[in-house]
Amino acid sequence: MKKLLLSFIVCFLFTTGYSLDASKVASGSIVNTWTWEKSIGGNTNPYMATPKTIGFNKKIAFTPNGRVITYKNNVEIRNSAYQVEKGIGILDQSEHDLISFEGKTYIIENLDNQNLTIVSNDEDGARTIFKR
Image (cartoon, rainbow, N blue to C red; front, side, top):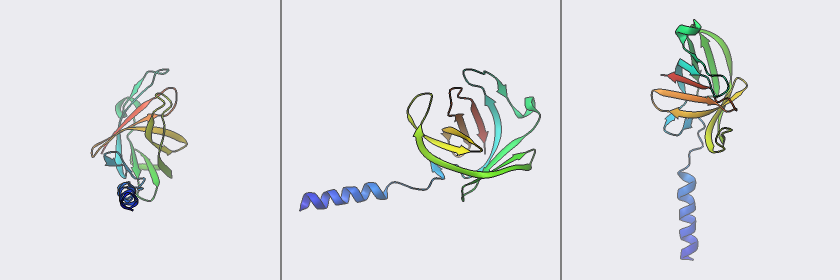
């Protein structure tokens, strides 16, 4: 009986300690407005793009209700759904936090209070860096 009670308590602790909030990932929250800093091409297409080299500013805003709004030079150009989930990265076959929006899936490489880095979950692995 004690083993059954102990098993129940352990199970309860593990299930209550896991957050099902899809907007929280690793060490931060994706919900916020992020300003594009630069994009770095992957293995098959090495390049670097910044607002200065490409000629425009870009922002993305992830809302608590699962929408992502994309801005180009502070003008809204897209409003679509996003989804955060666990999944396998194509490049390393490891489990990662993935975010899907605008028809693409990205690995969330870095997320903290000031930084968001996403990597295309494809063979190229292009990286995009945002700041708050």
